[in-house]
Image 1 (cartoon, protein in one colour):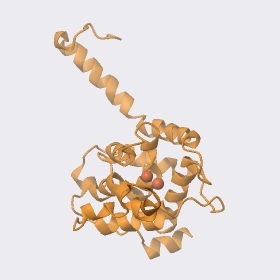
Image 2 (cartoon, helix red, strand yellow; image 1 turned 180 degrees about the vertical axis):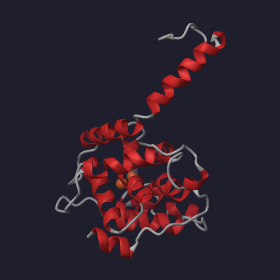
Image 3 (cartoon, helix red, strand yellow; image 1 turned 60 degrees about the vertical axis):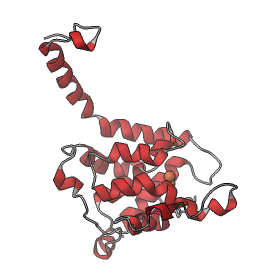
Image 4 (tube, helix red, strand yellow; image 1 turned 90 degrees about the vertical axis):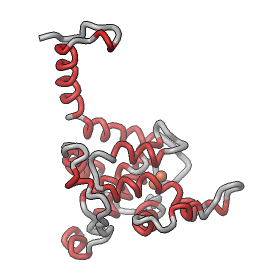
Length: 207
Ligand SMILES: [Fe+2]
Ligand SMILES: [Fe+2]
């Protein structure tokens, strides 16, 4: 068994090299969830100025989703929706959506990818050159109302230092479960399917 490939240019690699790399990458992907949880802790240090840290905001968004009875795809999407702030401050929404895309419902990926445009309605009017109606470019999209609700219930509402957040660790098993799924499984992606953000019955069980 080799412990390193033989080539210095990809075109010179052998079958053995690429079989070795595939095995290596599969092992690496198994730890995605753990790396994401570590990245969440790094979010704690980013973007000060709000009354809560970016981690606090993320955990609060996920806590609200959980208490609304949202399903696991929604809860994990709410937790990770701002993870792009670390490396992609100008398209943090698309960055987060790219991480989620192989593992959650298409609906949740779209909402995370576009939430930045939808959030503008809450503060765009205070900033020169910003368009509060940026969401209008998505008018008529099948998930438009889901993103509007995501922002209203979970995102724009989650900057409260006095809210009773669940701890980050509470969400770790859900992140593990989602990122252990078969990537791009059509039964997970469920293209075109809309699950509600709020489920009264599940919410009653959780609160
Ligand atoms: Fe955001
Ligand atoms: Fe956010």
